[in-house]
Length: 298
Length: 271
Image 1 (cartoon, rainbow over the protein chains, first blue to last red):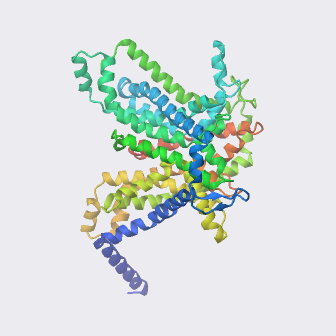
Image 2 (cartoon, each protein chain N blue to C red):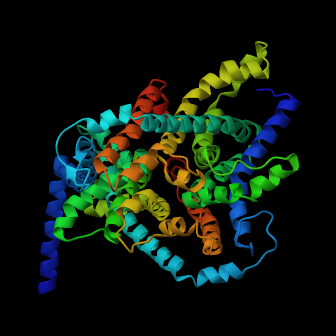
């Protein structure tokens, strides 16, 4: 036997012993699996978040913009009492709700058609057609709406025969663009729910004398509602945190994200306090949604 | 449900309009890249390929693509390793806090990007700066990897749940070590899920702008940052149009590949 053979044999023995140890001790295996990811997510990520939220209770020296690490609730007090902040928070929540409502309104006919009316052979293709724009670049989609809504753009051109002009850049443009961005997140769950709706329930409803409208109200809607709630988690929370879209098509409109952004340089503690607002609203929204049982269908 | 003729026509019209709303903006981007005019007026006065050749020679855009590719590859590599490790832990073990682990994985993508962005930014500032390490491509990769882990995790965990652990047990009963069982049995089973997850992670990283804004050092400009910077400059508008058109065309690829790789990925993974 040559020396290399001996070393490889010894190496193989070590590997075998190591494998055996790992196999016999699932706890050790688990520790090895989880150490690196948890260091990354729990220490690096959650740690950063924790520090950020603690810093919301610090203040800034108004002359030097240096962070002063003294515990105070001044930022939150300012947040609640300043009319501008209150206005912006309400506007942001309003935008998120409007986007969610619009998405639901558009998603229903599309999903109903793709799930129940279109020819069954066509349906998988239609799902792909809904999914594809989800992967088109976020920025490009917002840019597309900038092109549409710009002066002399597609919107103006289409509305010109009616003597109207496009909405231009501003709050309505922001709502429109955000609706466009998050629409697939609403269509998909609604499509899945409608697809899984048992046909015999609809037949039974018709046999009992309900017309299409009544069947929709009393049978379809209650069964699809949890999926709408699941989709709304995305449309709502993605709209609430957005500040890029507003900068591109919002004109002078300010949402909560813009306020956070504009405070980062000069007053990080204030930015952190403002940042807690969307997080808190989203958590509240999730808790409310959880009661519908929608989170299980995510 | 029996629908009347009118209801059917109304639905078809509604759905047609819905699909039009989804696709018209993307088509507009494609057509606009051929617009000879610098303004975005409609209809375009003619069609030209001039800006496409101008874009190819635009060094700013080319450099940005390269930075994005490097960042995306780095983030994907880290996400693949960490996401797979967590997926194995969650799918193959029962332990205290398992739900919490699945929750932490989703958190970076569930919270608004700006919150994740400033949290990482101030953490990098306090931890790395004393060490003499500033923001750069490295910090972008760290930031992106954090929210890319979830897509790899989702793909791999879905695959592991569908393939029972008994395959590995059979391999080990036949005398394979745990490592051998992994390379010969488990890995081939999850390979396509890894590929799909990696692809989706790369696409996610390539497209990200908010976390990038806060983690990129001076001089590091990814493609989304470049587009955002040049979008409002009339001088650069035609080149931005071309880059946008290319991105629209490219976006078909990952969805196509992911659909082919695994049916359970495409719908669930961009969550």
